[in-house]
Image (cartoon, rainbow, N blue to C red; front, side):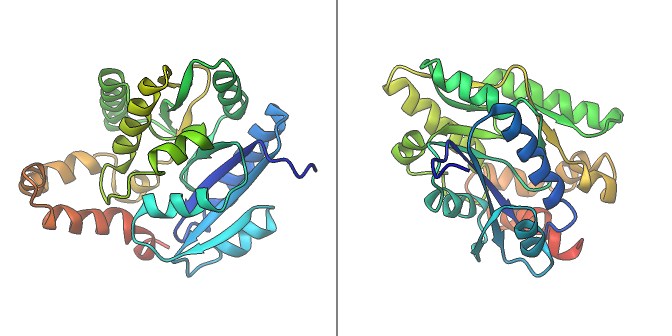
Length: 249
C-alpha cells in the first residue's frame, strides 16, 4: 500500500462492539470500489467494551478520546488523520459501495466545497417512514445534508473543524461549510447516487415511535432550549446519545 493517503474516514465510537466491524467492512468495500488509498480511523470514546480490539483486528487505526462531545471526538480524528479528503460516519451506520468514489468525483469537479448524504433506514415501518419523510423534508428545505460529512481537509481547516457544541453540531458544521464555500465560489451539496444506511438500533430497542414520544414528553425542554435554557435538553441528550451505549451494551 502506498504511503499516500487520499481519504481519511473518521468514525467516532463509544462502546460500539456490536457495530464497528460492519461499519469498517462497508468503508473497505467503498474504498475498494473507489480505487483510492483510504485510512479508517476509529476514535474510541470512553470505550469499556471490545470496540478497540475489534477495530484493530479489522485493519483500522485507533485513537483514544475521553470527551463528552461528538464534535470534539470527530475533530480528534481529523487532527490525527493524513488524507487530503476527510469523510466522517457514525459507527453504527454504514456507507453504500459507491460513496467514496462519488465523493472523489464531486470534489474533482471543482464546483463543490463538500457536503453530506441522504439517509435511508436499514429497515422500515410506518413510524420510520414518517421519520424518513421529515428528514428528507428538512434536508430539502435547508440544504444542510448531514449523516456522512465530506470535504477536502483544507475546507475543514478553514472552518476550524466541526462546530464543538453538544447539540445540532451537524447542522452548525454544515452551515459553516456552506458559508465558507460561498466565499470561495463553491457550493455545499450532497451525494446523488449513494446514501447513508442509518441504524435503527434505538428503534429496535425502544420502539419505532421513539422520537415522536420523546418530542411529546419533552416539549417543555425543547421550548426552553429554543430560548437558550438548555439544562433539561442537555440532560436528555446525555441520556439518549452520550450515555445510551453504557446502558445498552
